[in-house]
Each structure stands twice: as C-alpha cells, then as structure tokens.
Image: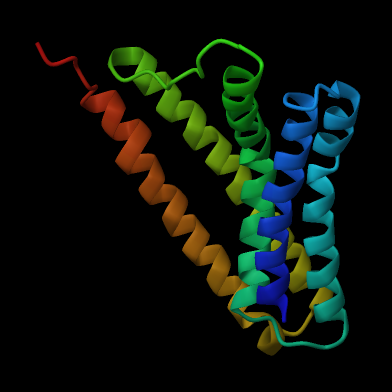
Length: 179
C-alpha cells in the first residue's frame, strides 16, 4: 500500500505544482498561485505520515519504506529547484518572461554547477539517511528494520558514484566547447 501512497504523492506533487503555476500565470491569480505552491511540501508530509503510521502499526520495513525516505530526502533537496525550473518555463510561456536559464555547458561554470547539484544530492542523502536512521531507532527491532539499513548502504553508494561521475570528473576533465 505504501508504494501506492508514494506514487500518489509524486502525482500530487506535480498536480499541486501545475495548479499553482496555472493560477499564477494563465489565470493571473498570483496570490492563489503562491498559496498553492506553498502547499507543495504538504505532499511530503502526507508521505511521511503514511510511512510512520505503517511502521507504527507493526509493519516490517520494506523497500517501500526505504523508497519513501529517499523520496522525502531528495524532495527536500531538489524540490525548490524543481519548482523554480517549472516556474521559469511557465513564466516564459504564459507571461512573456525571459527564456528559462540553462545549465552551463563548459568550463569552470559547468564544474561549479555539477558541485552545486551534488551538494543538493548530498543534502537529500543526509535527510533520507536521517529519516532511515530515525526509523531504525524508533522501531528498535533489527529484524523489522534490516531493509532500512540496506537503503542507507544503497544511497551511500549512489551518492559516491554521483560524486565521482559528475563533479570530480568535471573538475579533472572539464568540458570544452567544440571548435
């Protein structure tokens, strides 16, 4: 059931975001749009509540609990960027705003961009691992939380791979424009 809640929260995230942007730009109701955009994090709170309730009822932590923690962590870290990304596109399309900002393609600007993105991912990792660790301590049953420990390991491997594949690689071998 928790997987369905995660899917529902992902859909709700985009629906609330789109509703806020539609209200803000095509409908020209900036206050309503701002109010809806403020509600976007409530979707994350709903997922957190569902996951906590499931564990509180005695469920053994599974893949869905780890996925919920990862979703929440990365939503905290990248949510604002995703809202800004969508807002730029809506403003350009519906309000005559400037073209959306694109990430730099070359040189040190690209390298700095990759380090900033990795720093956001590191924040997402920290939040997700914090939630997983809190659940492990709260449940206090190694058999019921074994999957959560596995998620901490998987997320750690993923963040290290991201570090090496993007910011470190761009630092050592920065992209150059083709002439």
